[in-house]
Length: 69
Image 1: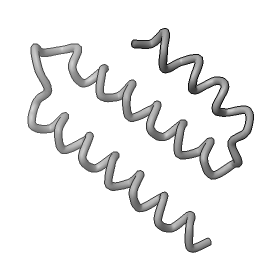
Image 2: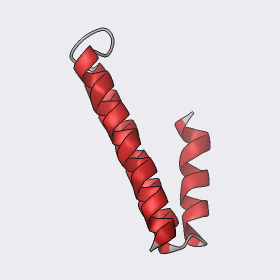
Image 3: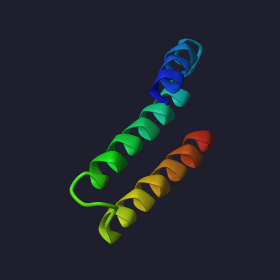
Image 4: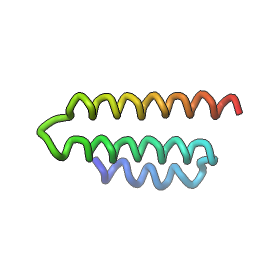
């Protein structure tokens, strides 16, 4: 999976503008945080789920506010 996604991410970043770069970094950070939240237990806890939902809500808010500015 990484062998397909990582090259596409790197090639896609060359033509990306600043807004898209911030969004891609945010989503990449969310992915890493999601994996880290899965490490301690065999599944995500309720608190981990709330954290992921809050991060996604922040991403949507960032996307909407960035379009306005």
